[in-house]
Amino acid sequence: MADEPTDLVLEHLRGLRSDVREGFSELKHRVSALDQSVGNLQVQMGQMQILMGSLNKRTDRIDDRMDSIIDHRLQRLDERMERLDDRTERIERKLGMVDA
Image (cartoon, rainbow, N blue to C red; front, side, top):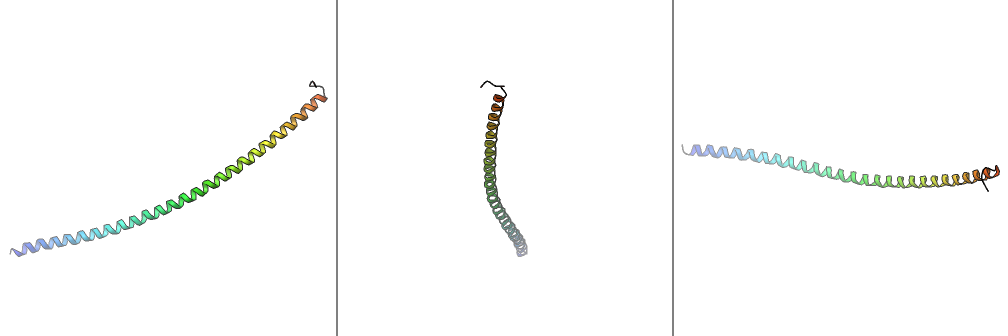
C-alpha cells in the first residue's frame, strides 16, 4: 500500500513534467517566431532608412536646382529692370521731364 501513493505521486510528477516540457517547447517555438518577426522588421526598417536617404538626396538635388533656376530668373529680372530704368530715364530726358 505504501508503494501505491508513492507511485501515484511519481505518476503525477511525471505528468506535470511532461506538461511543463510541452509548454516550454511551445514557448520556444513562439519566441523563435517572434525573433524571426523582429529580424524581418529590422531588415524592413533598414530598407526604409536606405530609401529615405536616397529620397532625401534627391529632394536636396531638386531643391538645389530650383534655387539655381530661381536665382537665374531673378538675375534676369534685375537686368531687365535695369534696362527699363535706363530706357525710362532716356525717355524722360528726351521729354524734358528730368534734368540732364
